[in-house]
Amino acid sequence: MFSKYLFLLILTMSLFSLFQTFAQEKESDQIKDSIVSDSVTISLQKPSENVWKPCVSPFVELLGKGFLSFNVDFRKWESHAISVGFLVEGFTPNIMYYYLAGKRHRFEIGGGLSIGFSNEFKLSVGMIHGVIGYRYQKKKGLFFRAGFTPFYSMFLKDSDRNMIYPFAGLSFGYSF
Image 1 (spheres, helix red, strand yellow):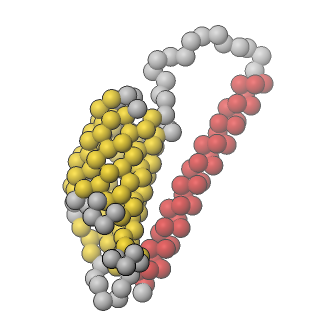
Image 2 (cartoon, rainbow, N blue to C red):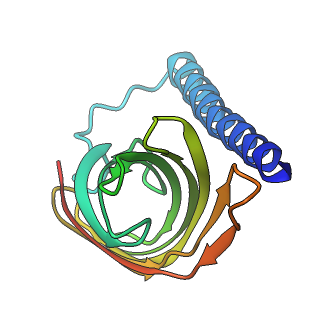
């Protein structure tokens, strides 16, 4: 019974954190726009090729959040990513948030949530995922991840036992 409330609390906190990040980014963009519009000097230089642009990366993950999952990674910012996907075992949806350090070869750390359904399509389990690992990603091209991906499963039935699963995972995809 306690795990139901813990799962809902963690889900609420995660969503709040996600919306807070989007709000801060939007506010930062508005401040930058107002500073540029108030400036007297106008620059006519071409933008540098090294400027990072948002990208989308579909990928397949082996082990990691489960035995096999299909995901899409959305990167609006250079150092953060949000991944949405589903586990093949029971079509369990999941969402992950990553913090990335580096340019092409990156250290990543993140966390996320998944929910599982029983055969009657009732909510039966919640999972909290973590990841610490390596990510290789070009602006456009090959996408590869490897890391330690433990998760904690919280069963919503009192008869089932909550467990921690220490997994490692590999991901392969392509960035557009």
